[in-house]
Picture 1 (cartoon, rainbow, N blue to C red):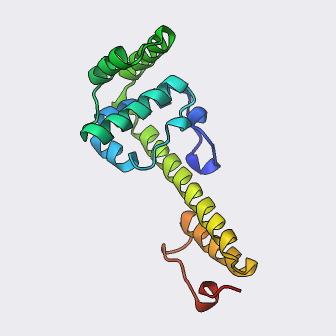
Picture 2 (picture 1 turned 90 degrees about the horizontal axis):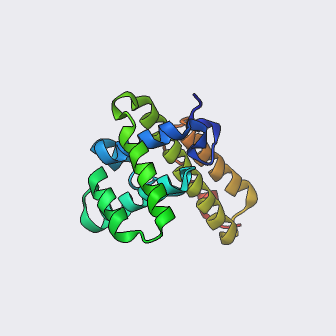
Length: 171
């Protein structure tokens, strides 16, 4: 099995069963849920219906403060999804999620957590680079700052970015 460090753009490399397991863990493993809730991207799931379920989980949590159970998700689908095909595919995805074995998936959840953290870090780096580009900073200084951020993301530093006067001062 590959790792998230290989710069995948979605969870397809893990396979469908692993993705079902990740979603089941979102529902049943509160610690895992809280660790990824702020960074999980429903679009990372290759099955669009699994992604829709993740989006529903996150939405319900945002509204109620509670992670919906599988039974809750069944009711939500029944009540809020009107298209027959969507309803059928969502129910099929829920069945597959319910069959996933969350007890044997600690490795999968660790890989998923690293994947979502890496995706979030890439987003932050891209935003920082865009901000620096708009700010008119000297290219050499900008590259040094980006290199520091990337080194930090790779675990090559103690997690501190060194900001010197020449970085702060625009060219």
